[in-house]
Amino acid sequence: MSDAFYLQRRDTVLGPCTVRDVEQFLTYGSIKPDDLVRSDVEDEWHPLESDPRFFEIIQDLRDRRQRKDGSPVRRRIVRYRNYDKVPEEQRGHVMFWRLFTGWFLPWRLWKAAAVLFSQRIYRRALDEEGFLKAWPAWIEIVVSVLLVLNLIFWAIVILVAFQSILPLWHTLVEIAKPLWDHS
Image (tube, rainbow, N blue to C red; front, side, top):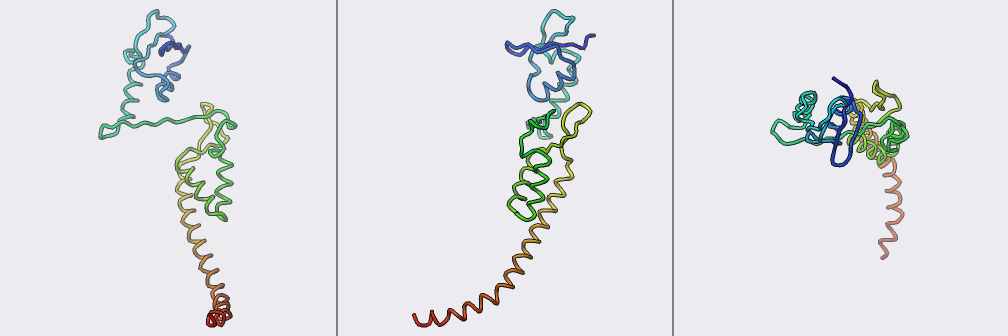
């Protein structure tokens, strides 16, 4: 059997494609199981889901897209090959800088954490397929701990500042008390 396949979706023909390409197109939703396919040695188009070479792939995708209760799961993942095309807020060095400066500016830390928890953060390293690697999941746990420690740190700073300003505040009230009594 040949490794080259052609895909037809509406008026568009894609190809030649490998089995891996077809699997990625299915995973990302670029093609659907009812789109047409033919190999370079075949003359006729037939639905992708009727081809035995792709039956297991389609079944596996359907199983992964169904939760245990039967409701569908929709998930699309963007994979980048070029670090310059990654949105700035998803770049590893930008995120690291925001987390570092966020210790002193808590709103930056919270904003960086929100991006980290909702999106993938990419670094310059490439995996074996040539795509950029994302930060590992354990980073989210570290950032969660960092958020708690930052909250404790700033609570202590505010408490100490309040206690050191309190005597000055009492002095100012004592000075201003005669002004209020005359009114």
